[in-house]
Length: 560
Image (cartoon, rainbow, N blue to C red; front, side):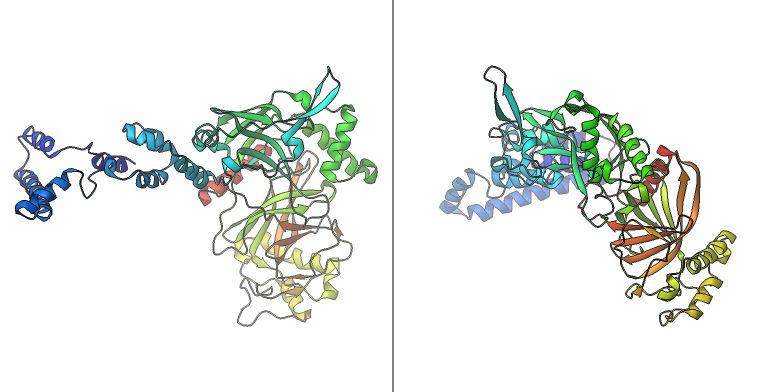
């Protein structure tokens, strides 16, 4: 940046002239003769260049006078930025970071006038924050009519009318949007996890048109794991006045109302609702609970016959509703992707029995894959490592007839588990259970793969093999893939209520395809199916693997 400013200063004529450089040289009498020689050569070169230029422009005689007169009108080649045409300066200034433009406006009056050009600030809004909407043809996307309009009742005439809650953007310009909205709130863009006890969550703060909106991501209704994610706006920030951004709480069913956002510290911020009465419903807590249950689970309490599930649902409603959208959020990153990864890391939604659907983050760490909970439950809270997969211990499935036997699957996985408990020295040795399964199986290891290699006990990534769940294994979703690519030994985290007595229990990790995973919990005799979250999430990439791993450690400490 200093170098860029120095270059600009020299081009603008603000740098040292030849006379200033000579005075500076004479003020330093102890300077060596080489520096004097370089200075003289530089000045001689400038004189020669000037003379050559005059000769080429003037020619000689009367013709030279005419050329000299035309040259006095302006230099044929710009000597500084000030000599460039305005459209060129607009292009140059548009490529600079928006945060540097106010300082550039202090250079001179011409720069200050050019920086009032809308094109410059529109480009900064687009390139730095992805804002695509035209202020002159603004259409708010993703907002319902209930969010844009609110019914105001005039008690004098007893009639209702709808008033638009959006300001008039006719006199708004991109410089105001950048200066008072996008740049001040740039630090809250990206992915965040709310501090809601064991339940956690996933918040995505994005630039949406002329708004900055905090979308809470909700899993699909149980057990439709392959349905798209649901979104609910929790807050929004926009330009209500020309030079002021306004924060509004979007929680509840009475439309936007006053809110506040505070940046507590780096990678952490808090939201506060200033009008919590907008969250209340006329029917009291019973109506609020019925509405919440329909939105959260897509059903009524009468439709849920399992008593334990009813208790869990009621407990979650009581716990989460007490916050009234006054929450603290901590930044989270998407896992980095490496060429050696088994598949693309990212976010998945999966089934967790009576707890419904939850969101996990799959990441790869050398020879291990880890699945961290972004949403949790009273047994295993958000932030904990729900699955850990050993990619050096593949498991070869037997034929379909033996796959239906829970005893056969348990013997296979527990055999690998016992060797894993003995230590790393047993990692490269082929397991006895896998060898026995291979003898009784119709399938064979891929050609060219020797025993003991990661691909020896499973099909290659480009091939598929039949798959079926063992009898007696509970699955929330009976519709699951009937072929898989690979299977690995892994462990899953289970615990009692309140995260008491946590322990890792062995299981089988199943890779169906690039977007669907599965895990068979041996001790629980249950199956979890995971489906990839395909939403585009911006401002969420981890700066480095070290920062990402530090984030995972911090997430576990938040709920441990």
